[in-house]
Length: 116
Image (tube, rainbow, N blue to C red; front, side, top):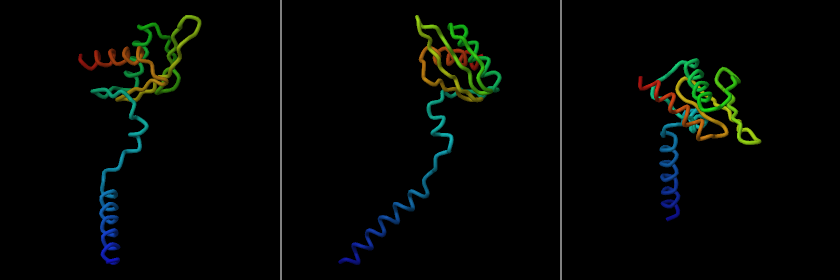
């Protein structure tokens, strides 16, 4: 009886191990870009940068180039100011910390460009 139980456990563990090893592995960038807003069409880095800056400025944000793939956005809010960073690549962008107003403005600008 003990041999049958041990054999059963070995078969179950072997099956679990085989199915876990054969499943699709996640791409390393999946976790990093999970919250990025994706574009329908691929754009150049300069096009994305220009769209983000234009969308922000048209909605009252002061946009400052930070890195090749990032822009700092600031907006006065009474006595305080809201500051956030927009990270982007050729097919997506991400606002950190999130700001729905800025995200919506950027999404609209990109959708308008891709529908043309």
